[in-house]
Image (cartoon, rainbow, N blue to C red):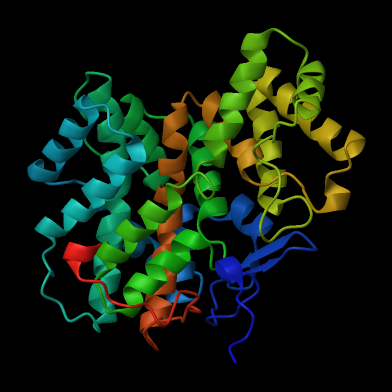
Length: 383
């Protein structure tokens, strides 16, 4: 007899990985042995990419070569750019546009005929995908504003270049550092839904374009990648209500509303990434001279944790509760938050694909059949 069904595969071990580890009770996250707090404050996103993909931090020479190889691949072909333009003009959802554009990137892949088992080729393809996603997203936003895309800046890192292509102006160091830190925090997080989706696709020995496209599709769901947008929309609702945030959240709780950004499938305490972004949110508020959004989030968090006791119930703020306010203070459109999540998480998707395909076994779980087993055939004229 089969074991009990584990809906959502909760608690089921399906693979071993050296990429990231989560301690949900202690609120601890590490990438390949390095604490997320250290990486967020000391590393660049390119360093973290190298760490996830190669298993160790790069030397200065290795980082320069690696970052340069990503810079060299930022431009996208005219055919893909036209696909992005048409989706922007049609007012397509940004995640749907990104999914389509990433899939279309394979049309111009110079190593399209590479053996799927050639992991070096997969790594090179992955660098191209990672380099081009910021270009796709920035071009999409420019097109829907009726403006021409901005060419990649040859001297800026991935995060700063994204902001440059988005606005047409070189970002100040604080803004660039903030996005870089957010990318690091979102780069990997165990076998979450989108990462597992990428791994399942890769286990068939499909190419990395298929795996990343599948990851984007999984991330687009509101139960996975959309909570940061939901949080910001709630905060905007608070602002437009002209009500005190404490009064607003009390009323929302009384009405039985669920406040987005609270609760996590793994963490039973406050997400360590939320703590870091809360600090960044406070810094941006002080720099901008407007602490409104920071006050809203902290007031809501304090009420839900201290007055409602959600943390004692294992429901604590997650990374999405503060990432939205950080992006909003940088002037990034709300519906671009999940695409930025994808821009970061591609690092984890690729890392897990490379790791899993190195010792591949087709992922093929079983489902327990609960339908009839003795149905009698009825000819169509008698149905």
